[in-house]
Length: 197
Image (cartoon, rainbow, N blue to C red):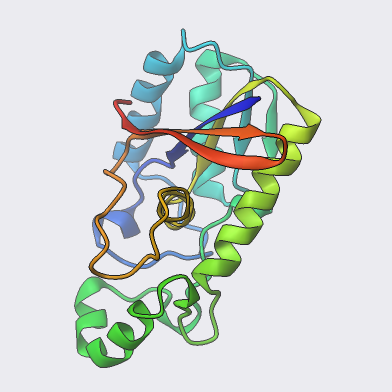
C-alpha cells in the first residue's frame, strides 16, 4: 500500500486576491514561502520517502522549500496541475458574482462543472487518480508527500467521500491541511482528511 499525504501549495498573491489561477504561472508570495518553511519543520519527522509535485511553479516552489529540510527524491507530474479555468481564469469572486447565473448553472453539474473553454472537474479527477495510481505501481509501500492544488484536492476529497460535488454537499476540506489517501491494488481510498499541518 502506498500512502499519500496531500497538501496545497503555499499562498500566492492571486490566492490573497481570491483570483482564479488555474494553469497560470503565479509564484508564491512571501507568506507562501514562510508557510512552506513552517510545513517543512512539521513534516521533517514524518517518515516521508518521496515528494510528488504538480509541474506548476507554485507547487514546485513549495515542494523545493519543504525539501530543503526533508532532502527527498522529487518527482513531477503535470497531471497533478490545477484545473484549467478557461475563460474564467483571472476572475475574482466579485467578478463571478456578475456572471452568477452562468456560474450557478455549472455548479449544479457537479463533477461535470466546466468553465467556458476550460476543463471539467471530472477530467481533473481522472488525471489526478491516474497520476497517483501509476506512482503507486512504481513505488509500492512508500510514504509520499504530494504537493498539488486546491481544485485537485477538492476533486479527490469529494469523490473519495462519495459526494457529487454539488453546491449543497458538505465541504470535505479545510484550507491548508494535510490529507491522507491510501492506494492499494490500483484503487484509491480515503485515509484521513484535514490533519493539522
